[in-house]
Image (cartoon, rainbow, N blue to C red):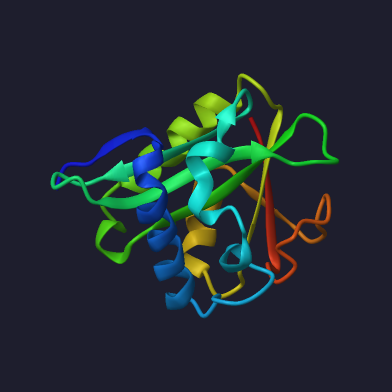
Length: 159
C-alpha cells in the first residue's frame, strides 16, 4: 500500500479524531488525562495553522486517513516543541509510514525549536521503542505540567 503525507485540511478533522480515538480505545486510554479529553481533537486544521505548529496526515491509496502527527508549542518550555497526537491505525503500523511522518515533523520542528518533548503511556511499548529508535531519550519528570496527567512516560530529543 502506498501512502500520501500532507498537511491537515478542514475536511480531515473528523477522520483524524476517529484515528486518535480508535487508538486510544485500543490501549485503554479513553479517559481523562489523555488526548481522549482534548477539546480540540476535532479542530486540528484550526489549531495547527500558525508558525511553529503543524499537523500532517497520512492517507492510503483510497484517500482514507490512517495516521497523523503534530508539532506544537509547549507553553513554559522555551525552544522546546511537543510531538503531539502521533497515532497510526493498526493496518498502517509496520509499513514505514510512521517513520515518514516523524521525519517530516522533525524537519519542520528544526526551523523553530532546539528540542522535542513527548508524553505517552507505559503500555504503549511499541511506540516507546519507535521513539527511542528516532533519538528520543526517556526522562522521568515532566518538563512542564500538561493536561495529559495520565501520561506516565516522557521523552526528549535534541533537534
